[in-house]
Image (cartoon, rainbow, N blue to C red):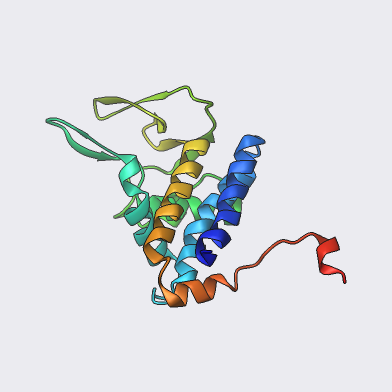
Length: 190
């Protein structure tokens, strides 16, 4: 039995259940929190959340929000810095205003995000004359449209990959034992 995998699946399954029930706020809130939980479990990471969060997102999710077009180079729609800004604006303010949470030299030009859900239909985007079918996109020059279902599933996939990488790490497994569990009240009474 893999303790780390089981503990992290509690969170991932909660996100999936929320998505299935169309409870997108709950799913997104937990999804933007999961990188913090992974970072906390690995005590070798530096204290503070911004830099480790950005690095974690870049390593495990970043490639999902990049496209390369021949002759045009790579376009980044969402990076770790903006993902951290989204996390902060959503969890601490309940809004999509990310400008105050990003470093100006690292901002991709977005000042706001809009969350939307899409049940299998594709959202089309256009930026800098690059057009590609993509699940997230640009609403206007300073607003990023994020498909909340896609984002949550990318985070779940990233956490699964993170678990595989750290499943044999003793300090991570030890810390995983400390993760909170939600139990049925009746099971707690003798």
